[in-house]
Length: 489
Image (cartoon, rainbow, N blue to C red):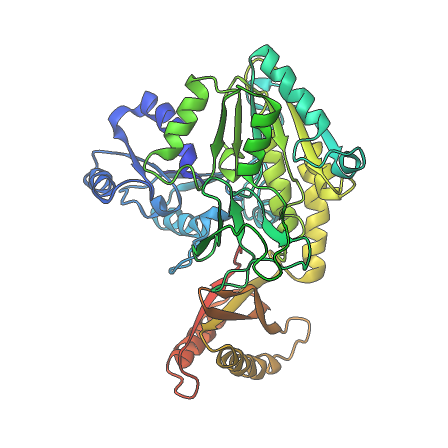
C-alpha cells in the first residue's frame, strides 16, 4: 500500500508503479467516479491487484496478507480527516501493520515533529538519506525582503529578483513553478473612504474576490455575490487587498506577454482528472510557468523545472495554530525541492516580509535539524504534542448563547475530573471555552474547549461519555458537540 497526500501526485506514481507491477496496481481516491472506485476495490478484494495506491482513504483498502505500507510525505495534514470519522491515516496504518505483522515506512524530507521525536526516542527506527536522489545539488535559495520592494515602489506580487530569474528561465527554455497558498484574485476588498469590507452573511470571514467571474466568494460556505461598482455603504472607491493565484497569473501575463501560464488550484482542477490533465499539459507541452497552491508544493518531479518562486512565505506563519511553524517550514522546504531535480541546477526565490524569522532561515538552507531542535523545545515548554495530546471539543449551533452555555457545562464536568488528580504537574490542562478561529460558518456558531493530557483509554471513555450526555441534554437543545484529537485546523 502506497499513500500520498494529494490526488495530484497519483498520476506520476501510477506510471512508475505500473511499469514494475503492471495491472496488479489499483488506484483509490475521491476524484474517481463511484463505479471506478468500486471496480478497483473489488480487484483488491479478489486479489487481482496486490498494490493499492491512493490518498488518505486508501488506507482502508481490502488488501489481504498486508506486508508493507508506505506513507509518502507523512507530515502532511491532509492525512488527517476533518469529517467523521476523524481519523489520521498514519494511525490507521500503524494499527493495520501491527495486526498483520507488516512494515510501515514513513517517508519525508521534513518529518512531523511527533514522528521525529518518536524516532529519536527509539520507538521508530530512523533511516537518514544524507544525499539527494541522484546526488543532485540542492537548489540555490535567495530570500527577498518584500519591504525593500515596497520602498523601491514595487507593489506587485513579483519581486524584481523573481522577475529577473523568470526572464532568464524563459530565455533558456526552462520551466518555473510559483507557489502561493491562496486561491482567488484578492484576499479581500475594502472601501478607501469608509473602510467597509464585504463579509459573508453566513460566516464570520471576509469575502474573497475572484477576477475570473468578477464575484466575491466565501471559501467556507460557497456564498457568492457580484462585485459592486462602488462601496454599498458610502459609494466610495473599492480597493483590492492581498493576492491570490488568479492575481499572480494576471500580473505574470502583463510582465511576459504571449507566454503561456498555467494555474493549478481548487478552481481549475474541479473536474474529473483535472490534476492529471494540467500536469500532463505542463510537462509534455513544456508550458513555461505553473502557478499553484499547495498542490504544486510537494512530490512533483519535472526535470526541466529549474526555478521555484514562493510568492508569500509568511502566509501560514502567523496563524492561530501551534503547528504554524512546522507547516511553513515543511511547505517551503518541499516546494524549494521541486527545482533542479534533473541534470540542470535549480534556484529558488523566497519572498517574505520577515526575512530574519528563524523558520524562514532554516527553510532557506534546508536545515531540518536546527528547525527541529528549536521546535521541540518550544513544544516541551508549552506541553503540546508529542509531550501531551490535544483534545478539542467543538460545540456548534444557531444560537450563540446556547453554544457558549453548552461549552461551559462541559468545562465544569472536566474541571471536576481534573481536580481529582493528585500529581499537579501531570494534571490535565483546560483552555476555553473560546470562539473557533472562524467563529461562524454557514450560520452556525462554533465554540471550542481544549483539553491537554495524555491520550489514554480512560480519557477517551470520558470524552465519549461527555459527548453522549451532550447529545441527550434536554436543557440546552439544538447544539451539536464533537471531539477531535490533535487537529490540524
